[in-house]
Amino acid sequence: MRLVLLGPPGAGKGTQATQIGRAYDVPVISTGDIFRANVKNGTALGEEAKSFMDRGALVPDDIVIRMVEDRLAQDDCGHGFLLDGFPRTVPQAEALDEILSKQGCPLDVVLRFDVAVDEVVNRVVNRRVCANCGAVYHLQYAPPAVDGVCDACGGPLIQRDDDTEQVVRARMDEYRAKTEKLERYYVERGLLRDVEAVGAVEDVARRTLEALREFERPRDGEGS
Ligand code: AP5
Image (cartoon, rainbow, N blue to C red):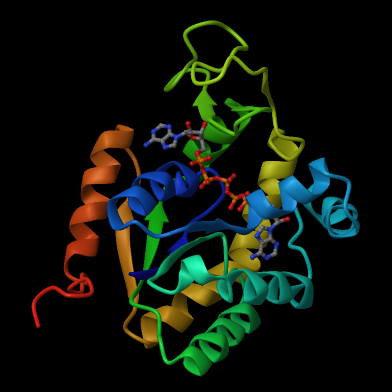
């Protein structure tokens, strides 16, 4: 399965990506997570990306494309992958098509998660993430058992620097200005499928896996 997840900030891409990655046994590649890991480790890439992320702007295409090309060349992507947060612009999508056509492995499907703006703002400003293992919580919908403490590893829960209402509205503006054009790009290629991303996480997961069933291919050694 070679899959792209599209959707506004806070649509639940990261939440569903974990479950899809597990179901299809493919690596989840989140460009946002890669940037945040670089920021945390104080790399030059992280420093460059942070100035864009903190104001809700997209990191320039050439930086993101190089980073994803390197990641897709790694062995674990040989049998598929899930891209969460890439591509986000038409030039990124064109670059992805070029990378995959060199490998002779085109995309199978692009899933778009659909959520209203007010719900997005609520989800993002109430999101908390574990500084240690990256587990994601929501103060109302998916709170930790103990305030401020990760259920999975006991690490401290923090708020992302770009999860303020002001920055999330800027991220929405970027989404409308640049990423919505990308939706048309994939509609024209017959690859886009919509998933209604409101309701309980388990219901969205069920709808997502149902939408993917039509694109399943036999695994190696199956159904010759
Ligand atoms: P990135 O990290 O990709 O952020 P994003 O796309 O804005 O998405 P989020 O991580 O905010 O949300 P999500 O959809 O994953 O939602 P989640 O599952 O966490 O990018 C950050 C920045 O990096 C960008 O602004 C940009 O600067 C840069 N960047 C990254 N990729 C780039 C690229 N390709 N090009 C250029 N720049 C790039 O869920 C959100 C919350 O809602 C959680 O609290 C969760 O618990 C809760 N939740 C989830 N599902 C549900 C549900 N069904 N019901 C109730 N609550 C739910």
